[in-house]
Length: 414
Image (tube, rainbow, N blue to C red; front, side, top):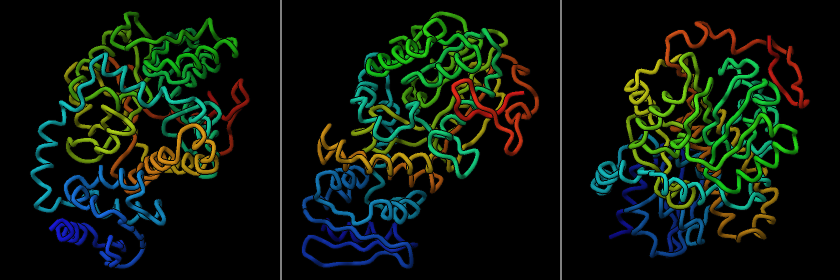
């Protein structure tokens, strides 16, 4: 029965592109038509039932433990995601889908204790792991490819300065960095823009590195990195920036988050929220990603985010949608990671390498298909908190670029 239902499911989803499946008994069947093509081999028949009932979770786990073999993982996602991303589920999966929708907010409940545990699950992994694939500044978020030929390091520098321009900084301004990571954004704002930065994180590993980097750069007097929940911050700030943290807030806490942003922001202040989001109505998170990569994580619909902004009568100054930038970033991360996969095996094991590779390539494809996007939302307490045109975001033309004080790529300031 389960093999028949799997056959029905694959026939339902795959119309464009070809998926060739080899079943445990050695038989092979093709689904869809034309190119691109991908080949999947199901080695253990016990996983078929789970593929029918929980396809995202079972596929990821099957790839991790070897019960499913995929000849070309990147090629597989290029076939699979365009086929399933906007498709309606077959009838036998709809009751489970409805249940997930009903309980999705409960799954995203991130109180302070749970938030700490969720952060530790992902961000307190060995710093050596992230050194394998991130840029020199350890930016673990979408890069900004102002030019197609940019290296990863250049694009990450461009991202930080693009965000800095949106903050309309002046020397001496006090900036709160919510989810400061390893300190790269805060150090850039202090070094190149004269800001005084308070950076908060829940990761002990990230905090230790951020503090050390500030000391090594001679910026300890301008960068105060703390292990602190943003909800416990009490000072007032001219600017607030948050890059890649909002995905961990959880829908039940959106009102609390933007209420806190409003509370901490000066009357003429600006905040810039950089977050992954999804296209379409409110939804639930991929169960494999939640279990193995980002517990409690959720990429919101813009409507969910905007509802809380409006609830607190904050003014949206600007929204920019970065579309395929993250797909390119993730592709570079994957390729760099695989170049040093042997080191990752030494740090962890083969199953971890397969898990991390699956994560990076699945996300690369999701951003390429357009199911996921990156939103940069600029908000303030007053309508005129930011300039009324976007000219200030692009103060350079063509090759008129300058070097920052660190010698790295930066868009030239006026």
